[in-house]
Amino acid sequence: MPGEGDLQRWRELLRRLQAGPAPRGAEFDLCRRVLAAAPAAPEAREAARLLLEAAMADAATPIADAQEVMRLLRAVSRGAVDLLALVGAT
Image (tube, rainbow, N blue to C red):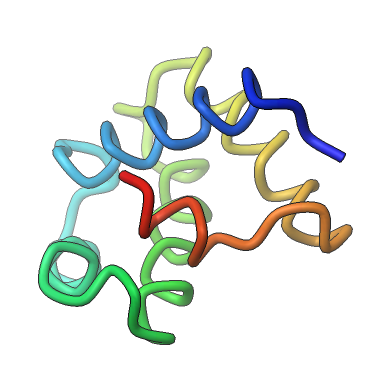
Protein backbone atom coordinates (compact mmCIF):
# COMPACT_ATOMS: atom_id res chain seq x y z
CA MET A 1 0.00 0.00 0.00
CA PRO A 2 1.46 3.38 -0.98
CA GLY A 3 2.28 5.78 1.82
CA GLU A 4 1.17 9.39 2.02
CA GLY A 5 4.56 10.50 0.65
CA ASP A 6 4.04 8.36 -2.45
CA LEU A 7 0.53 9.68 -2.97
CA GLN A 8 1.70 13.28 -2.63
CA ARG A 9 4.53 12.75 -5.14
CA TRP A 10 2.09 11.16 -7.58
CA ARG A 11 -0.39 14.02 -7.22
CA GLU A 12 2.41 16.47 -7.98
CA LEU A 13 3.50 14.33 -10.94
CA LEU A 14 -0.02 14.41 -12.36
CA ARG A 15 -0.12 18.19 -11.89
CA ARG A 16 3.13 18.53 -13.86
CA LEU A 17 1.82 16.32 -16.65
CA GLN A 18 -1.38 18.36 -16.77
CA ALA A 19 0.67 21.55 -17.05
CA GLY A 20 2.83 20.14 -19.87
CA PRO A 21 4.71 20.31 -22.08
CA ALA A 22 5.27 16.54 -22.03
CA PRO A 23 3.60 14.56 -23.37
CA ARG A 24 3.00 16.61 -26.48
CA GLY A 25 0.20 16.34 -29.00
CA ALA A 26 -3.47 17.05 -29.59
CA GLU A 27 -4.59 13.78 -27.98
CA PHE A 28 -2.80 14.68 -24.77
CA ASP A 29 -4.09 18.24 -24.82
CA LEU A 30 -7.57 16.69 -24.90
CA CYS A 31 -6.66 14.54 -21.90
CA ARG A 32 -5.59 17.68 -20.05
CA ARG A 33 -8.91 19.37 -20.87
CA VAL A 34 -10.85 16.34 -19.59
CA LEU A 35 -8.86 16.36 -16.35
CA ALA A 36 -9.41 20.09 -15.89
CA ALA A 37 -13.12 20.03 -16.70
CA ALA A 38 -14.21 16.82 -15.01
CA PRO A 39 -11.61 15.38 -12.61
CA ALA A 40 -14.20 13.18 -10.90
CA ALA A 41 -15.63 11.70 -14.11
CA PRO A 42 -14.74 8.12 -15.06
CA GLU A 43 -13.15 9.48 -18.24
CA ALA A 44 -10.58 11.29 -16.09
CA ARG A 45 -9.10 7.94 -15.04
CA GLU A 46 -8.43 7.01 -18.68
CA ALA A 47 -7.16 10.51 -19.48
CA ALA A 48 -4.67 10.31 -16.61
CA ARG A 49 -3.52 6.85 -17.69
CA LEU A 50 -2.98 8.06 -21.27
CA LEU A 51 -0.91 11.00 -20.03
CA LEU A 52 1.19 8.72 -17.84
CA GLU A 53 1.83 6.16 -20.56
CA ALA A 54 2.61 8.82 -23.16
CA ALA A 55 5.00 10.59 -20.79
CA MET A 56 7.17 7.47 -20.91
CA ALA A 57 7.53 7.80 -24.68
CA ASP A 58 8.14 11.56 -24.75
CA ALA A 59 11.80 12.58 -24.66
CA ALA A 60 10.83 15.82 -22.90
CA THR A 61 9.80 13.90 -19.78
CA PRO A 62 12.47 14.34 -17.10
CA ILE A 63 14.10 11.10 -15.92
CA ALA A 64 12.91 11.61 -12.34
CA ASP A 65 9.32 11.98 -13.57
CA ALA A 66 9.66 8.89 -15.77
CA GLN A 67 10.76 6.89 -12.74
CA GLU A 68 7.74 8.12 -10.75
CA VAL A 69 5.44 7.35 -13.69
CA MET A 70 6.66 3.74 -13.64
CA ARG A 71 6.14 3.47 -9.88
CA LEU A 72 2.64 4.91 -10.19
CA LEU A 73 1.66 2.69 -13.13
CA ARG A 74 2.87 -0.39 -11.22
CA ALA A 75 0.78 0.65 -8.20
CA VAL A 76 -2.26 1.19 -10.43
CA SER A 77 -1.75 -2.22 -12.07
CA ARG A 78 -1.61 -3.89 -8.64
CA GLY A 79 -4.80 -2.10 -7.60
CA ALA A 80 -2.94 -0.32 -4.80
CA VAL A 81 -4.02 3.13 -5.98
CA ASP A 82 -6.92 4.52 -7.99
CA LEU A 83 -5.99 7.18 -10.55
CA LEU A 84 -9.38 8.83 -10.16
CA ALA A 85 -8.71 9.41 -6.46
CA LEU A 86 -5.33 10.99 -7.28
CA VAL A 87 -6.73 13.15 -10.08
CA GLY A 88 -9.60 14.35 -7.93
CA ALA A 89 -7.10 15.45 -5.30
CA THR A 90 -4.91 17.50 -7.64
